[in-house]
Image 1 (cartoon, rainbow, N blue to C red):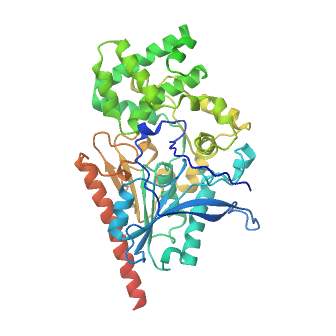
Image 2: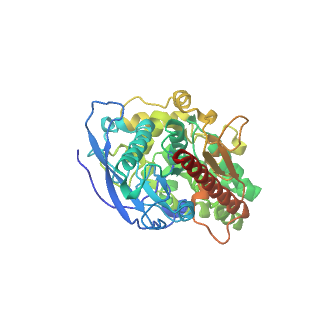
Image 3: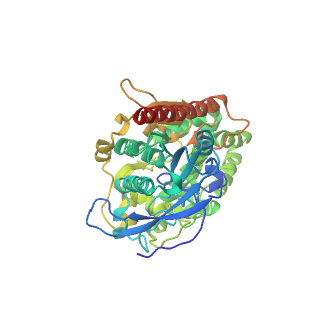
Length: 461
């Protein structure tokens, strides 16, 4: 199989959200001590298959003492080119636990390419089940070979955020014997096709800033839709989105606000909208935010049909996963008064997008996915669900502990605490609620390690 190798930094997000890196707020990547390749099985479901591909992973040993890891932290990457990770909770945990950090790139993303193109038949091995099996096979191989001086009884902790957060939860559900626990940050464990709760949360988060912020978003949207009827070419040209169809253009407009809220910049967005005095002022701010934050080209249907491998483009693979398994389609909230996007953004738009992009009739069976993994009823031990109060994805995650469940929940309610906020680097002006949540997460990690080591000591005795 042809492996295409190119080093490009990119970050994508869930479903149709394709922001520029500045909005998502991704920290500078820390150079790994080693970048290596693992020979991964292509099809874990077929025991007779001998086909393999090269899966990339990174190694960080900065906090390993005397070349002997006391624990291992596995960082699960997702729908982006994973050139490594930035500073944050992962390395805070590594320092505390004297852990080796391994970062595994997701199949079909970045340099971990099984095939020479992304044609629809070649995407057949891209799904949740194969991704989870990749993680398990990788861990088993590292343990069996004793790589990096990892002993057979060295404890492993896994973590991820967003879709990888869901993978972290599902991995704990499917393979509890391979690690001692995990963190599922902003974990979208509920498959849902018509996800209008996302739109509702963008509205509610903007409302946290002010009623004026919400009103001005909605008034700008009304202007844009009116202009789209009167002179579509003119309004699209103003946003440098002339190649988009009308509905694709409205999808892009919706993601301007969504991107700011999800990217932990809700306050800045509202401050900009609150500063003007007229509709033209607010419209100008929205137009500027669009040019700063969204990738206009990626909202075109033709963009998704491109099957050539390009490490700077991850939308085709990820949209395929949403179309076959999980949905997460950001439709408009039926309650118009609590909406920040056009009411034209209904499920049929995404249904047509799936079929057109891949040339086959596909749409996610959300009930099947939730039946297999449990959805919001999942129950696993030694797992932490963490979510920020501004995060539009929280309604597909677990934000409250339920009686009889064995997981932990950290719901971080604070200003601009949004997507995967706990994983980010610590800052001097972090809200106290965020600082406390991180301390509690690290304390739980330490507790798991202590309990595991005590059990191992008893076995030896």
